[in-house]
Image 1 (tube, rainbow, N blue to C red):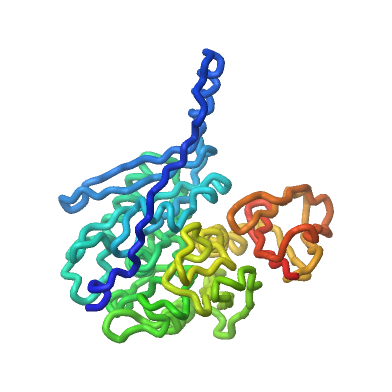
Image 2: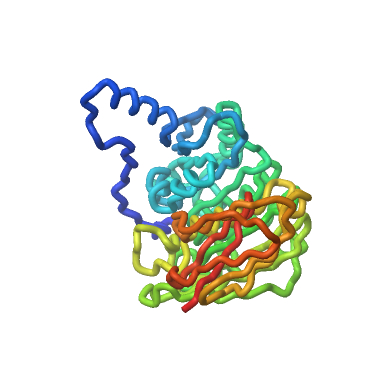
Length: 398
């Protein structure tokens, strides 16, 4: 089978680890300050558990603002076939977002399948009997025992084979998964055949039309087309069949690709089925610092995925299920200069504007039901406006 004769991605990364401390301290005072700082510093923990008699490994990233007193979301980030947890942590990197948004981030490690690490999602010819769904469930349970995790807000994402794994979890572990996002992955015929999700599942599919590893148009032998995947989930979620289609700004005209965002909304429990179609994009993670050929740089997949996840818990849309959520209208969007916010405020509300890589650019306080925010000094790009605990995408054009 071609999938195993040609690795879905041959990443040769030099894994790098964030160094929190670069200075030698010379006094006791500085030493004590360093200790105090380290208590709240980010942590990267290599962990393992036994499942079905096999030691299963993972890498957990804990943001500096985690205190153990408040339940926080958990994001599972699955690597692709032939890759590993460390490479995925660096390639499809969510760590800066974890630091700013406060969620725990875990990178599970696959087992060996035909000589390379991967996930047992029913690929023909794999020969694997590994229960990766059971391992994922055990991993969620273990982390929930060790850390303060909001079990209504557990999300799965991944690259290539890791995207296939995310879809498998949506089908077979939906009782523990609030939403999934796949980057260059799809569904196998096996996954499609046994899919039995127990609740509406918000779905985000990011995929390049020129993907030569997991073909956009599918392969009857082992993978559904992206159109068929989206069709399945918009039907299951009972979404509107007429989508909202937005062509995103071509921020990097040299990357050889553009992005169209297709949203099927108004599903049961307020969920959406969404597709970010990377026209001309390859088998890559958009926005990654590892800018391999075919990588779109108009969006950052990690930022898009978290903005998507942050709208949902296991019961559906947070805006639908929380009567205290604000209602907001942003116009014009896209904009060339300013945006106007129309809100239903009962009290002052703080806002923050972030870049696509999670850098805070603006902040302030909204005191009325009408607010203007000036973006004229910012370049054309995609930005994220955080209002309370809601996140909205803002497009700045030239």
